[in-house]
Length: 75
Image (tube, rainbow, N blue to C red):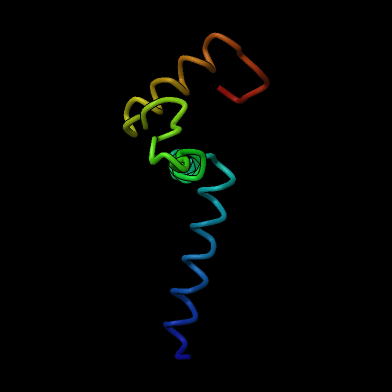
C-alpha cells in the first residue's frame, strides 16, 4: 500500500464516519431496510408495506416528522 492509497483510505473512513454521525446516510439505510422488508412470499406477491420513497420524498418526510415532533437538536 502506498502512502497516497493509505491517505485515501483514511479519508474515505473519516467521510463514512461523519456521514453516519450527521445522519447523511439515513436514506441509504432506509433503502436497505425497505429492500430487506420487501421480500416476496411463496406465492410471488410483494410484501412491501409501502412503495419506496424517492430520496427527495424521504428527506421531505423526515423534515416534516421532525417539525411535528421536535426533539433535542441544535437547529
